[in-house]
Length: 415
Ligand SMILES: [Zn+2]
Ligand SMILES: [Zn+2]
Image 1 (cartoon, rainbow, N blue to C red):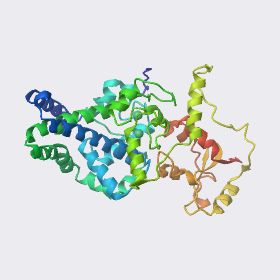
Image 2 (image 1 turned 90 degrees about the vertical axis):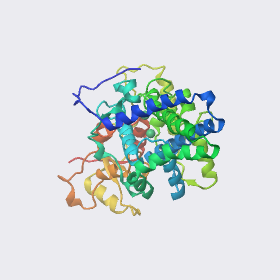
Image 3 (image 1 turned 30 degrees about the vertical axis):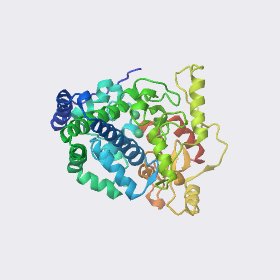
Image 4 (image 1 turned 90 degrees about the horizontal axis):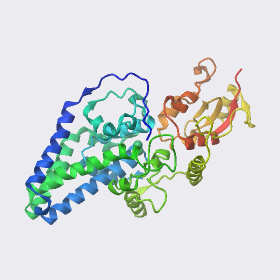
């Protein structure tokens, strides 16, 4: 892969000693435990427990922490959310709130040395485990939408009592279950420690290997890859290239042939009525992304770029509105929610119905929306979101740029 680095002078980061000691300590304890209880001397029930703990906590991360809480790819009842929170807690990767906010940063600033918490551009080791050892500041965290997380009582409860919950479900529950077949000690070593390493490193591979090695059938705008072996290890998250292109999709791979047990579990839960509102990327957008990548492999662009996502200003044949016409349009929209009209690169965009779909959340769109009261417009105009859209706040994908063009209402007349 191509490793890039920004010219920004990075401040030396402080070591996060408590995290580092815990992380290294669990590794040492697991190795020592395995030497005491070699795999072929362990009871069958204990090995099965290890597998169950590993896989169920893996689903807690992929279905719960990732697809539900980080990306809102579906809706789930309080009961389902609670079960997913328990399984995710068992994985010991921090509270839902902390981990999801960090992951949202990763999507918004993918491959940014400064602002992607585990940027692949800082090397394979850093993106895998290196970042865990440093106390990061996350200077742009305030820009990340968090209201949905803070509103959810399951997230609030789990965040508040995270430590005792993690210790109980991660370290105490396995030996308690091991008591049933009189192997509490073995269950602690294998179900408590070894399974922890399995779930940790398999999850971390999504941050490292899935940004390092594999195919890019959907986009080459970031380092995300599609890796089949990784999909096997991570309950389906290996098709990371699709995920970075369509992060709100409940599937890591749209094809029935894509190995994605998390998607299959969700489809079953949906059939049974436990989850609703499974979100899918539009078929034409998926096809367009694939076609574009295929054509790109045959065509060399002079400037190395690929973009022609829609009509530019010169090609626009639609209406041209002044500010008063935009305000009048907003007043007459008659939508239940407040209209969300924005200006992006000189075009008036109607994002009202798109707010719920926006992978970065509704809050950030609202910041750029036209205010109800015209007197609040600065200098008679409102902020053009072009800078934010083009990379200032997020490197939007080619598909996102295409969708933006579809949402254009008019070109804004500048006096
Ligand atoms: Zn990623
Ligand atoms: Zn994601």
